[in-house]
Each structure stands twice: as structure tokens, then as C-alpha cells.
Length: 132
Image (cartoon, rainbow, N blue to C red):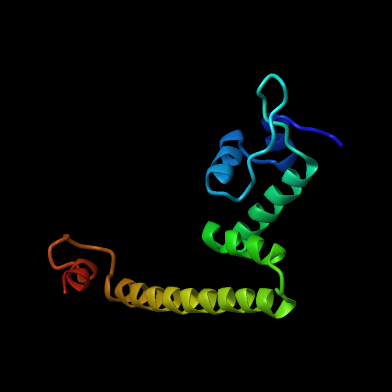
């Protein structure tokens, strides 16, 4: 079985070395055994797990949610519906964020339309809207 140093793991997983340490502190990556000289020896499974974490983050999952997904993976009795439920919850969160962003954009567009972009700053309709 191939053993990796923390630097090799970071390189193979395409992350910073400190990211590996952070994931360990958060319990996302189990602390690996140490060799005779005290250096950590990671397995290729750690590369896979780190990739899972990074891909999950890219899809909007928080580290807490990722930890829950990892726990569900090994929890007896977990089924696909449990995992799908987590994904559907994330989709609902994203839909809410999109709706919030659309409202913010509409408010900003309204302010931009009210301002000619010329003249002195006093009486600026954008600043007045933000004051009220």
C-alpha cells in the first residue's frame, strides 16, 4: 500500500498543505498513523476523501454538511434517500439564495435608473435611497 507524506497528499489532491491540516483539525480527514520517525503516512484514500471534500465545497456544501455526508456514508442503516435528502435541502438553500440575489439586483437596478450619473453628490438618489 502506497504511503504519502502530507506534501505528497496535498499535491495529489491539488490543495494547500495547510488545507490538509485544517481538514484534520475539523475531523474531515482522520489523523493518519505515523512512521518510526514520527512523520504522518497518508493512504491514497486520503486523496480520494480530500477530493470529495473539495467537490462538495464547490457545490456549496459547508464543512459541517460535508462532515455529515461523510458520517452518513459509514452509518449503518443509511440509504440513498438520506443522501438525496441532503442534496435536496442544499438545492432549496441555493434557490433561496438566488431569490435573495434577484431581489438585491432589482433594488440596485431601480437605484441605478434613478440616477443620471451626473451632477454634485448632494441629492444623489442612490445615497438617499440607502439612507432611507
